[in-house]
Image (cartoon, rainbow, N blue to C red; front, side):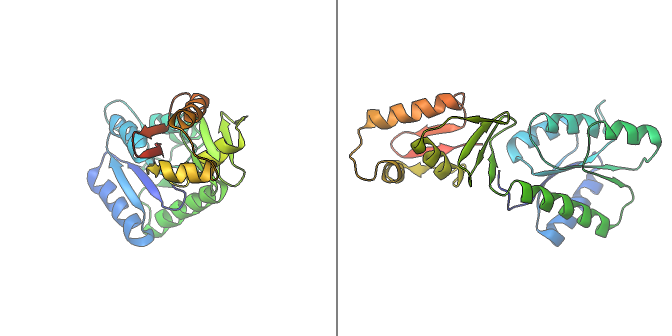
Length: 224
């Protein structure tokens, strides 16, 4: 997940409203946006788009609400969640507050309010995660400290494993060539394929056989 680009998930069942919000954010703060109108669409977008901020209409159709979406998000990633609603009654607010949202905008809101709220929470989140690459709810890698964490606990890595993960984390979802890996980890040695395979196998086990992909004959990638 990139911390530089603002990737905004907009969950709103009024398509015209959703597209208007997307247009405002794309024009004024160059955000990348994706729109979901149902809970199922939101779930798919969360997994494929990997947003780093979410704007959620509280009242959705099909028996689900933005609160359900917020709970789904918070069980998978740490990103700001801002509720959008036409209702500001005590009962609605209390339900929304149970999932600890980062912001709350009452419709109709002004463009300036939407822009300011979105920028405020995105930049705050980005400052906190500027050096952290989040793999999923459990795993993350801190580029500055070269620390792999699982559920908040540090995973023990060798020096080479730290260097390898740092290289891949700087090139997320991009294949890093075998030659680049060998030059980084074994600059003065001629490495046999078995040595490299065993090294990758051990690290993959520390990642629960996830994220680390081998592109045979080409190299490796960190897919998140």
